[in-house]
Length: 400
Image 1 (tube, helix red, strand yellow):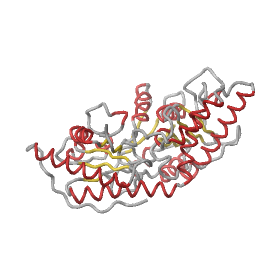
Image 2 (cartoon, rainbow, N blue to C red):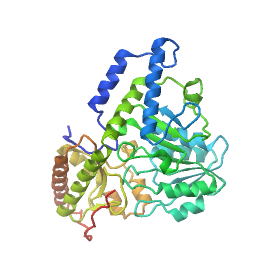
Image 3 (tube, rainbow, N blue to C red):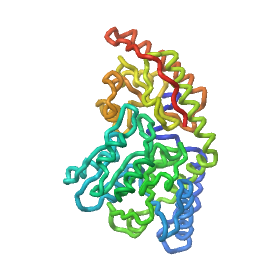
Image 4 (cartoon, rainbow, N blue to C red):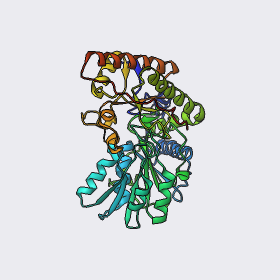
């Protein structure tokens, strides 16, 4: 089994304190929070306290029935589907996204397109950032919804959400952001971002799988995808899993208690890893290195090497990483994100994603660089057809 886990963008290990909180919840109160008896009322209080706490950490306050809303979902995939299909409305119209969205967002967009919606996409530069000039031409008063992610799941590039928000505000168009890779990694302020809806998922920040959320700005009109219950204002009916919600709250609290410390630790590990790789293998390329990025994501291209071959060799050597989004990891197709950025084919074909987590140790950056160097050199030496691509040294990454 891999001894160094650098695939935290796919999922993170559950924190032991989160497990303790969930175990305690299961043991002491397993009642349905919709029930009217005392145990049900106790479960409801746990649920609503957690809802208030999570919303507060993310920069908003829930005043029940008269404020912003936090809808609990099964995770970011459901949150993105609910946002895109629920905010766009029942009648076909125009929706705008970027070309680098996660499959859980581009998938429902494709579904809407098949249902005669006009789906338009904002182009992205080689920097990994959306083209604001192009966005301005697409975001018009006849647009029904815009969705642009906060931090990219493959490159870590942080998108100019405030600028996109200004364009949407001027056109009177609601804006959704997929903040799945950002929540629990950097401070996220719902109102400061200027968005109308925000998706996230607990298993990306050391919480339990199967629980996520969709923040909604007061007055935002959301059409439900599910029917058959009164829970959560009828916007997402069904049983509300109290223990999972409590686990998500604790996981986010653990991050929030020492935000600056955790963010710096992630940034230091990533920067050390990239610096060592560039010194040892000067021909590698760090994707989006000059852009503002999430502190834990490193997308490294190894020109001349096949990404699948390299990933499997690293896995055999004890290092877990990925070739891109976990939702598309079964595919052998090149990364649609890197292709949308217009990168050279050799970079796209040789790119791997390394993502750090709060449970990684600083020494693992050095050990991972050792293994990557050894493995990459071995693969090149055993395959004469794989040529080293010369390139000028890159500048250090911009720190947040």
